[in-house]
Amino acid sequence: MTGSDIDSLRDDWLRAELQEALDEDFEIEMSEAALSKEVARIYKKNHPELLDRRVYIESLLKLQAELIKLQEWVAHTGEKVCVVFEGRDSAGKGGAIKRIAQRLNPRVVRVVALPKPTEREQSQWYFQRYVPHLPAGGEIVLFDRSWYNRAGVERVMGFASEQQVEQFFRDVPEFERMLVGSGIRLMKYWFSITDEEQQLRFLMRIHDPLKQWKLSPMDLQSRVRWEAYTKAKEDMFRRTHTEHAPWFIVQGNDKRRARLNMMSHFLEQVPYEPVPYDKVTLPEREFNPEYDRAVLPDELYVPERY
Image (cartoon, helix red, strand yellow):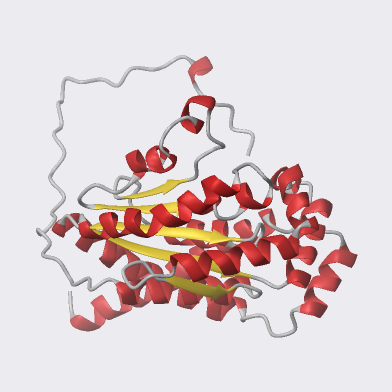
């Protein structure tokens, strides 16, 4: 096979991969937008300069290819990477996490989204329920919300006393210092959106039957208490933005730009390098001339309705 043949095959593969990614992203976007025409019109009016979809997909593919390299480096070197995603409800944390993990190995990259604490967990040291989910060597862990629940929803909604909140603020810098000291690469991202953008996204969810499940009574209360959450967020930054565990704010009104900007920044924080690969060859399959494949009964098969 000549060099031009290889280049042609590569170009064909890239075109096919791009089309597959466009199709896949279209399916994802469809699941996010079964909207009334009026809500869709309002959204477009408020977002006149959204990043072009094709530019977004091409950029996303490049970043995801780099994430694969990062993943291989982490697995090869035994590094431990922990990424905390925080932000207001509907700010885009879940969408960013989905695109990061989309093409990665789930044996290396884990997403942690803990439910509300049990009665037993409420009696434990506050950080205890999070510790078992921290990365071991060769792992990347993405926390979809984290121990910072205490600085946000628990504080604003009154689920934690002022004494508990104050204890959290005293403990968290040292807790994170210990994580970093143990060899964990810790990154903390806050996804920021405006008051108007959150209201618009909540309205979209109300009108979208595929997304109404995302709106909990707690989410609706977060709208009522916007200013209280803002004050809590500012206090959290002031008291937990440290040299060893800084916060990074992602401007999130444009979801596509937010995802790309966050992924690009994340890649810049880790000094990953190419790792050696063993050459892979496909072995010949063994054939037994005396073997006859059994005919299985029809009821074992899933009906082909599509």
